[in-house]
Length: 272
Ligand code: C2E
Ligand code: CA
Ligand code: CA
Ligand code: CA
Image 1 (cartoon, rainbow, N blue to C red):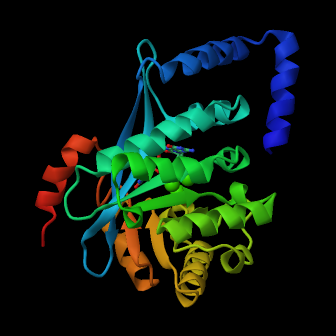
Image 2 (cartoon, rainbow, N blue to C red; image 1 turned 90 degrees about the horizontal axis):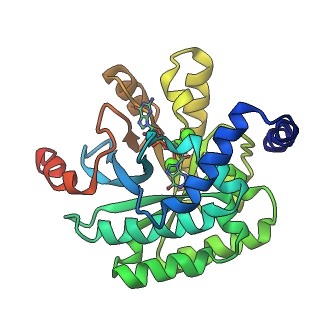
């Protein structure tokens, strides 16, 4: 699908499409965004279903554009992947997330999304190690979230990098599991601590989604992984995923993304 997307992009280029002009502008702005400090991270809590305690927070990138306002990550990350900026942006995310997590109470984990392109750049391990070193964050408090796209090619190299991160003490999560190029063999091949089941299986209450949710959860559990249900918005959904052996929950029901400075107050309310 990505390739088709890029093909379309080239076609529009010759046609001087208005959308493309918007895209060019966005690319120019994106190149400056890091230097102008327009990025910030929000953090969404994930909770242990059985203890109801907050285990940690996922870092979610925000771009505060001076004219266009807040631009959601899905509308600029693929552009940043196409032009390679994601590597620098990803370094900033890792460094900032580790630094900010240092000020949180109770050994909270920080989970950071990593693009497949960062694996290709071959500097990921060093970036992770140096973010830990500079912040002083203990490795066990960092979780790296990868999507299936990262596992597609150069498999041996990816496994090596993931194992090296595990050796540092960093945790690895498989994000958006069940979408895209999912293959059950990945669960055996790659060293995941956690599976995150995509929101689409959590939101739907039809028999098929429920069966998929149940199978993924039980497979992951028997392979020794913890299981996070993503995008839980209602008490009914929470009850359902609890019944399906999910170990963790993340969604608007249990907490919206927030700034790092809101975290202490949020945690204070959550003490059982
Ligand atoms: P994701 O990793 O699956 O992150 C979860 C997304 O679901 C977030 O959207 C979050 O705000 C949203 N969400 C959480 N709970 C709920 C809920 O109950 N209902 C609904 N409808 N949505 C919920 P967001 O922040 O817009 O991020 C979108 C995607 O952008 C992320 O999906 C991730 O793939 C990517 N992304 C975000 N930050 C980064 C980053 O620092 N680096 C990279 N490479 N990708 C990032
Ligand atoms: Ca994620
Ligand atoms: Ca996800
Ligand atoms: Ca997603």
